[in-house]
Amino acid sequence: MHYTSWDRTDRENPRLLAEAEAIDRWPGLYFRKALLFRLTGDFDGARRLFAQADAANPNPTPLFRADMHLRQGELDFAQGRWEDARAHYADAAKALPGYWRADMRVAQMMAIDGKVPEALARFEAIAERFGEPDAMYVAAGLNRDLGNKDRSQQWIDRASKAWAERLAQLP
Image 1: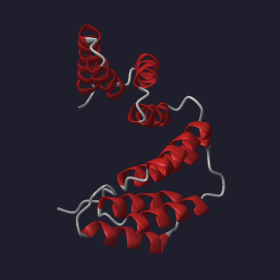
Image 2: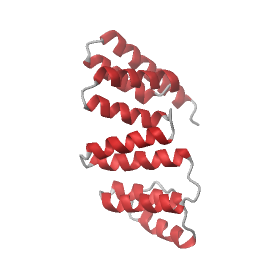
Image 3: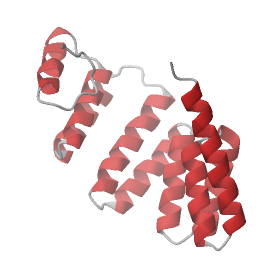
């Protein structure tokens, strides 16, 4: 069976990406290659490829800019470079104000810094505004940590319902 998914992480994926690069160089190609490098632990290679993706995009949208900062922040976070990660997450939030993925990362860093009530408020706002189950689960965990068992359970129930609704939409 031949797969053409760019998300494959086996030995064939680098070959397919190299073939695609020989045909055309576009930001998404470098972006996907960077994700592959990150998965294999080559963080420097991933950074280089994210930079190539950025350079290959002549008209980056705010979403593209935000996603680039998020991905770079994730690389930094995975390597324990928390200050760099924090800066990238803040830049992502500035690139696309109100982008829930960036806001979640900013809130994550707030929780790590011990600003749990402030982080909780952000996660709950994201969960309320976007119906995002991941934010609901984090809100549940932070509420639990703060001793708010009933509130925690409410968020767990809402997240479970949101995931069930999403799964029901799949073919």
